[in-house]
Length: 487
Image (cartoon, rainbow, N blue to C red; front, side, top):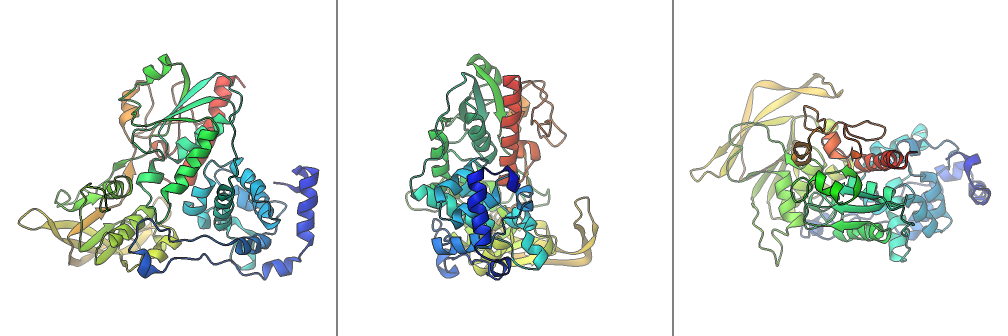
């Protein structure tokens, strides 16, 4: 936010904060360290969060590091355009309620984003401290601190707006759906979110383990949306339980499709149908959402003494770290590129390694071998080397001729990507869909080929981050508002 756009009183106190300490003193403050549970303890528990959160003293000191730049590039790196210096400077002066209000002006899920967003590739990557060869301001840690502290104080951020009488529906309660619901409700629309599962939260609940994102944190964000007037309907599948025509007959004027990308991909290699080979979607859903392996739950799930997880993204890290907690004595990440190309967050790789996870980079499975009972007992790996860059700019892995090895395993979790949920695209006639199965939309408004039907998140992107899905939700709320209000 430019200095001259601030309200006079805001400009006054922020100028005082700038002048209270010199730039040299600010930049000499080291970046805060996140307190973490010891690795030997955390592999024994599913529900204790690894990152423990920073203290009030740490938060104020870290907020003091922020230079409050006149042209803050960190904001341009945020897909939902949070006023980052604004909320950070409110932390510095001790006004947590106002810091939380600034966050929630553009983000429906600040406590979630503070935990799972890849800040190092987004907002923090644009921090001015990089020019000084110093660690960036810990924006994610501060976002989590502000959101958690406001919640513990009982700060209520959202109140129902006066209804404009227009009803809109949302299919899916993941990050895109929740972000859309919060933004459109703030404009006075009557919002109903239809969720296919018995829990609200989508991938935030079934995909991300509680040691990284506790369910209580997600539930608190959902309660804030309910306080803003959003209605949630569970166990209802748009496209099956109710149709698009049903929604129109119920008086809904618009639909935002946020049904995600829950269709797992496999590699098409021999042995993928063996017992003990499954997708990360299935594995994490059984454990995170259905309680498999925990007292009081009888959901079955595979167990492996030696578990191999195929892939290098955050979902692969979630899967391998879960396998360790489920009792795997040896848990191996198999990734066809080098660790430098691994798309998972650096922090997640660090945590996995601390928890005893092994990494076999530059290896790719070419076959799974079963025993006489049809259960996986080994995998054959092709050693790889990096060749020329592919379309994404990463160097393409190519096989090393003759370099094949066999590794004993008794469980394999495949985490090589997901495809869009085909249910809604197949159920609504006239909806333009790409060859990849994603819904085609206008990138600015997120409107589909059907008037009144908007879409965002993984059903459009085919698999992305929480914060990118939230950015889609915000744009769709703006687009639908313009379409329905005639603005």
